[in-house]
Length: 606
Image (cartoon, rainbow, N blue to C red; front, side, top):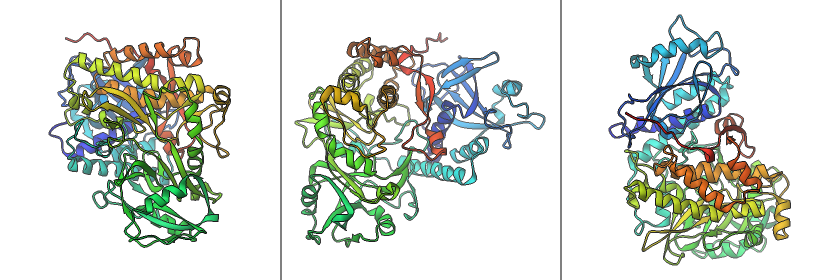
C-alpha cells in the first residue's frame, strides 16, 4: 500500500477486518463476481492472481429494511471461498489480506430498494454497478461500523460502544504506522523487541489495535502514553483479603528488592504489583488497599499483550497484571479462574505427552487474587507470575514471538520472508515444512493422548531458532487462560485432574470443545497465517504440507483425525457476534469451510 496515507492505510487495516468478520459470520448477505483478467493494480499484489468484487448487502433474515440505502463493496486479490446459489456466488470465507484498498459504498438509486427482502432483487443493480467504479465512494471503518449497526438492529449504546472501539483501533493503528522504527534481525533484536514490534496485531479481529479505556480510567489519546514502557506500582493489601497461589510471597520479595528503597511491610499484609494505568480501578473497587507512593515503583517493558510485563533486571520471569482497557475481545483484566488454576497446572504439564526438546512451557508458578465474590470486580486486583524464555536464558537460542514473523510491510512482504531471506518458493516451502512438522509434534500429542489443548495462537507461541544457523529448533508456549482440557481423559492418562474454580472456562464438557480451541488457535490463527505469509495458501502447497504432517502424527482412527480431516466444515469463532452480545468467556461459533481440507485455487491465468 505504498503511496497511501497513514490514515487511509489504518482505516483499511481495521475496515478490512471488520468487513471480513461481518461476512464470515453471515451477519450480512454477499455476492461475489469474478473478474479473472482485469484486477486493478495494487501494491499488495506480489504474484499474478485472479480475484473479483464482493458486494455486501443487509442480511434480510435479520432486518427487513435498509435505511442507509447502501451496498458495501471491496475488490479481492484472489477468489474467496464461495458457494453457488441459483443466481450468484455467496462468499463463505474471506481473509482481510485478500481485500484490495479501499472498502467502498454504493448509493442505491431512488427507484431501487431492498423492500423485496432478498438478494436476487438487487442483482440487476449489482451487475450494473460492477463496471461503473464512478459510483463507488471510499468508506471509513467508523462509518462502516455505523452502517452495520443499523443493518444489525443494534441498540444505540451497543453500536456507539463498538464505534468507539473501532475508532480507537484506527487511531492507534495510524500512530503505529507513523512511529514504526523497528529494524528486526535474528541476532541483534532481543525477545522483547520482537514482542514490541507488532505492526497490525490480530489478523482477524476488527479491534486489533484498540486501546479503549473504560471508566474510571480516563481516555488515553494515541501518543499520550508509552504502553511499551509502563511503570509498575505497588499496593499493600490485608492478607485476609487475598488468596495466594504458589510461591507468590517469595517471588514478590525478589521483585521488591529491586526498588530504590524498601517498601512498607507487615506480617498481616501483602504487596501486589499494579500497572500504573490500573490505579483508578484499585481506588474505586478496593478501598482497603493502601496505594504506595510512586517512589515505590519499578520500570518494566510490556510484551505483546500489554498487560504482561518483564522487568529488565529479572530475565527469567514475566508478570501478568490486570489492565482496564479493551483490546480486541475484552478488558485486559486477569480473572480469579486463571489466577487460581495456573499455578496448579505445574504437575499436570510435567506429565503431559510433550517432547520437551521441541516444546518449552512457561509455567505459572505464583499468583494472587481477591476474595471478592464478584469476579467482575476481583479480576481488577490479581497477578500471575510465570517463567519467561528469551535470548538471555535459552542456551544460545533466539526466542521470537510468532506473531511478529507474519507481520507485513507496506508492499505485502512478511517479516519471516525478509529476515530469513526466503526469496524463492522452494525456500518458503522448506521453512514452512519444518515449521509445521515441529509445531504439530509439539502441540498435537497432548490433545489426542491427554485431552489437553494449549491456546496455541501466534501471541502465545514463541519460535526458538538456533542463533548461528537460523534454523527453527522448537517452540515455547505460554498463558493458560484460554486452554481447554477434558478432565476425565486427563485423569485416565496421567492420574490427575486440574484444580479449577467452579464455572472455570478451561474445563471441556466433551472432546469437540477441546478441538474447537485447537482449530481456532493452532490452525486458523497460527498455521493459516504462516501459509499466507509465505505465499503458500492459495496455491494449496501449504495445506498439502499441513495434511501430510497431521497424518503422520495423529492416529487415523482417532476422533481428532476424523474431525479435522473428514469433515468439510469446522466451527469458526464469531468475533463480532460475541462483541455485540458482550461475550468473551462464552464463545459463539458458525460452521465455515474447513481450512484443513483446502486444496487451493487452481485457476488458469492469461
